[in-house]
View (cartoon, rainbow, N blue to C red):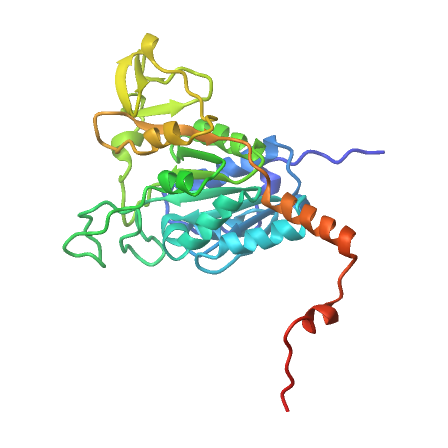
Amino acid sequence: MATEAKLTKKDLKSDQEVRWCPGCGDYAILSCVQGVLADLGASKEDTVFVSGIGCSSRFPYYMDTYGFHSIHGRAPAFVTGIKLANPKLTMWMVTGDGDGLSIGGNHLIHILRRNVDVNILLFNNEIYGLTKGQYSPTSRQGLKTKATPFGALDNPFNPLALALGAGASFVARTVDTDTKHMARIFKEAAAHKGTSFIEIFQNCVIFNDGVFEDVANKKVRHDKLVDLIPGDPIVYGKEGDKGLLINGFGLEQCSADKASVWNPSHQSAAPSMLFADVERGGDLPTPIGIFRRVEKPLFEKTVHEQIEAVTESKGPGKLKDLIYTGDTWEVS
C-alpha cells in the first residue's frame, strides 16, 4: 500500500493572495507556521485555523487547511465547539491584541481556564491596525492615536499575566523578527496537550512602527531579551555571560555562572509571573520563551467522559423527553 507523501511548506499555502501591508510582521509569522506544520507532518484534513476580526484574522484564508474566519472576539467559542465535536482535530486560533483582549477578553479567559487543546497565537502590535490606528488594550499609556489625540490614559493589559492568571497550562512569548525562535516555540506549543497561549511581538509598519525596536532589533536583542528555556540557565548577552537570579519574590542580574535554572513546570505560577511582570525597557532584559508548561485535564476529554458515564448509567436520552421535563406550559 502506498504511503501518503508528507506535505511541504508550499502545499500548505492557499491560492489566495496574501493581503497585508508590505513589511508587516504577519508575513513572517504565516511563513513560519506553514514551515512548522510541514515539519510536524500535519495533514490538511485534520488541521483547522480559526480567527476573529483584525489584520491577523485573515490567517485562515492563507492556509490550505480547514479554516473559519469567525466574528469579532468570538474565536474561542468557535474553537471550543469544533474541538468538542471532533477532538481529533488539530486546532490553531489566531487573534490580535484588539480582537483577543478587548471585545474577546471574556471568551479568551474561559478557553484558557478550561484547557481546550488548541494553540492560540496572539499577534500583539499594541494598536488597532485594521480599523486604522486606534489605541488597543495593550497600548502604552501616553500613546497618541486618532482615538487618543492627547495620549492614552488606560493601564495596558499584560497578555502573559492575564493568561497565567486565567490558569493557562502553556504560556510563551516570541518575536516576529526571529523566525528560528518562533519555530521552536510553535513546535513546543503543538506538542503540548492543552491550551497553548503564545504572545507574538508583531510590528505594525503603518500605525505603530518600531514599537518593539528597543528589544527586537537584531543589533540589541542579545542584551535586551532573555530566552526562558526549560532546564537551561537563565542567561543572555552576546557572549552569554549575563544571567538572572530568582531571589524570593524578585529577579536580580548576575553573572552567567550564578544564574537560576529555569523550570516552567512548578505547581505554582508565581515564578512564571515574576518574568511576565518584567517591564519592557527597564533595567532587566525582556523575557521571551516558555513561561509556563504544566499538565492539566483536557476540557474536551472530560466532557466526553461525562457524556459516556451519564449515558451508561441512564441510557441514551431523547430530545422530546428533555423538552417535556420539568415545568411546562401551553400557549393557546
